[in-house]
Length: 623
Image (tube, rainbow, N blue to C red; front, side, top):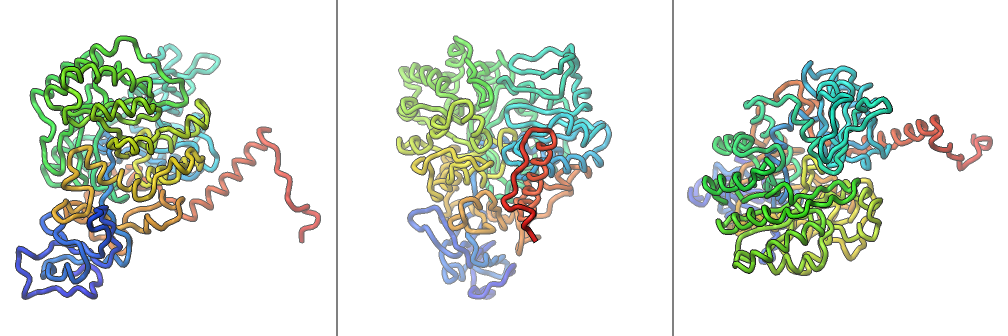
C-alpha cells in the first residue's frame, strides 16, 4: 500500500517474490547513513525489521510489492536513530504522566501559569511535580520560582519542583504533606532551609547529596501497575518524537531490581516497546552492595534479553561510598578515606565474572582514586580484559587520567549537564576551567571510546537536540558560551556520538547505529536538516517520522496518524494529557518570553532592585 505520493516507484503487483518484498520503503529523502562506505542515498527499504536496500528509487523498486508501505520523505533529511548512552528511561517512564514538564518552557511566567492551571484539575491527595529537565537560565526572567509563588499558584495542592541536582522548592501544602516541621533534622548531605523562627521555608538543598530531594519525591503518590505501563509507553513515544530509537538506562537511586523493571519487562514481552533499552543494575542499599552484586551474578548475565530489552551490566554506582555528586553550586565533595577496600571487592567480583560496568565520577579527584584500584587489579590480569567498562560524566578528568583510562581499556560517556549547570560551574571554578569541562576533544584525540547522552530526566532534559546543540556550539541553554572553537565538535562527529558510539556502549555497533544493509531499521526523518540549519536551531529540531525495527513509532506533520495507536493517557488529569511533554520553542513563545522579561524588569524596578532604563529617544520629540 502507498502511504504518501510515490512518483518514481511503481509497485510490482505481479512480479515481486514474497521473499523480496519490503515491508516499508522510504524514498525521496536526503539520507545520511553514517557509513563511510555508502554515506548518502535517497531511499531505504526495510524487511523483517532490518535494512535490505540503501540506494535510489531504482534500487528499491524491485522490493515494492502490493503490501509494501511506501513513504515519501518529501526531500527531508533522514538520519540513523539517536541513541542516548545515559538516560534514566525506566524511572522516567514510571512517572512521566504524573509530571508537569518545564523542559523547553521559555519564561517563568508561563511555567507558573501551567502550574496554576494544573492545580485546578489535580485531585485531592495528589501532588503536582516538576521533576528536573529545566534551569532558571532558560527563563526570560533568569530566576527560579519562590516557594511563595508556588503557594500562590496552588494554595491547596502539594507542589514539588526539582531544580537539577541542586535543590527543590515546595509550596506550603507540600511542606505539610512531606511532614517537614521545625523539629525535622537535616539529613546527611542535605539541608532543609528555615526561616528566622526555625520553620521550613519550602526550599531543600542538596549539600551536596540529592538524597533529600529524591526521598521527598518518593513520598508522593505512585501510579498503579496498569498506569505505569501507559505512562512508560507515552514516555517512549515522547522520546521517539525527538528521533530516539535506543537508550542505555543507567539505573539510579530508588530503582530496585527486579521490581521497578517489571513494567518494561512486561511491555517487551508484549511487543509494546518503541525504544530499544539496554539496562544496568545499581545496588540500592549502602553496606549491602556486595550482596546485591553476588545475587545478580548468580541469577542473570549481561546480554540476557533480546534486541529490544537487554541487561548491559552493573552501575552507575557500584558502592555508595565511591560516588561523588554533580552539584556545581556546592563545593566538590570529599569522599571518605578508605572507600577503596569495598570498591575493589565489587570491581573484582564483576570483572572475574565477565560483567561490564559503568561508574559515576564527576571529578578527576574521584577518577584518580578509582583508577588506582583498577591498576591494582590489572596486576591480576583483570584490566584490560575485553569487558566493556566506562566512566560516566568525567567533567573535570585530567589528561593524565585519560591516558590511564585508555591503558586500562575503558571508555567515557559524556552528558550535557553543562548545558544546565555551566553558569554555576563558571561562578565556582572560573571560565578557564569551564572551557575544558568536559575535555571531549582530548578524549577523542587519545582514541578513547566516547558516547554522548543527557542524564535525563532529572539532571537535564531528555531532548537529545539540546545536547547536540551543546556539543556543536559550546553554549548553555541560557546562551552562555563555555568553549573555544577548537574544543567544539563538528555536526557529523556530534551525531556519531549519539548514534554509532552509543551502540558501542552496549556492544551492538555491528547491528545498529549506522544505516547499512543487514542492520536494524532504526532511523528518523527530521523536520529540518540538521546539517544546514543555523546553530541555534539545532536545539529545536524534532522528528516528523521515527522508525524502529521497521515499525513507524512516531509520525507528525504529513505523517500524523501513520504511527501505532496508543492507549489514552491515564489518569485523565495527567499534566501530560493537557500540556504534552517538552514544550517546543515556537515564535509566539519567544515573543511571550520577551514580554515576560520586560514585565520582570518592571517588577525589579518597583522593588528598587533595578534602575529605570533611560529612553534612547526623548519622548518630547516623538510624534
